[in-house]
Image 1 (spheres, one colour):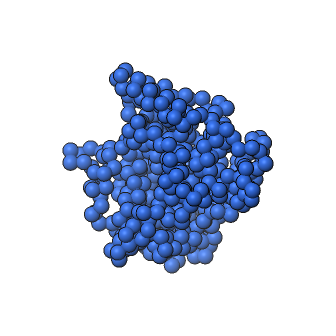
Image 2 (cartoon, rainbow, N blue to C red; image 1 turned 60 degrees about the vertical axis):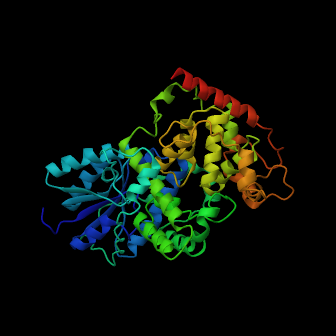
Length: 475
């Protein structure tokens, strides 16, 4: 193949122009570029909310590419077979993609790369989804980190490359390959009526993500450390949605936070620490590829989790009808907005795994179906951290009391009133929107009586501690 042959750019979770190493290097070659997205089995396996949100991101990214005179080719099928067909159709001499670090993606990519290289195709993967490649950060003895604090100390002073600017133009091929109509993929089907509700809260695309970042740096980062745990306060960046789909580069976000810290923003360093928490999650999932399926700490295999996801109690947790206002408001926030405040995520996870003694995988799988910002690494680490079975875990005896958490972080009940309608004289529009978003099969309505407590908090705490003590004794 000559150096003038096209390059197939296989996009996955990197739907942006700027701070995108694969796009910067490809544009610099001067060769024709064919941007491609493949709906393969890993995409088909996504939950309802992330799959729907991916569709919105693809639609916006396609329009962005069209603004440069390019286009996004959509194909469905086994990724290796799709790429082989595209190479035959276009005469492409290279296939480049941005790295992913979960086990399923790594296995897929490895099986694709070697056969292509053996045939003389320039098959290459690029960094970009994380700041620090998981294998590049090692302990003093040469292994992977298992605790966040030393990981943070290892990376906080490292040089982070400046983000690449967006290319001003992309060279196009003489003939474009056939593309599937995005509508034919039906990525929104599983969301059903919830899509119309969540659609009013999404922030789609690179321009919107950068505007969100700019607003956070201008108005929120100074108070970030002090206010980030208060779910009724607009204090967080809310960039998880955009980072998940690569609509903004992590290096761009890092440097914006670093500049704010240098300019005296009191919450700047803590914001960088939270970005590194995301890095740490990917570091762990790369080195412990079953972290999203198995207990990180093997001794927890004998913990008496309830694993049935179809019980009446689990259904009440999913519905936001546990009778614990903070838990219920958080679950309903997820159905209305597609996301959930981080403090609230800890509370609902603690309630499920400790007060209810339900396995963290039940919660992990539900979040994977319902969150538009679902991230396989952060989701797995977060659930195991709260449950007590994971790396850098909260000790099991630290059982969050949702009522005390509400008193501390939602003292005026603004968050709870926003999302809970039952018993309210004039429910907030978002509280009513929950009933438009939730499954019809639940048969819920705002004029229902507030649900009674599923379990007394003191009783749940005692049961959790007793189970923990039995685990320790058996060990």
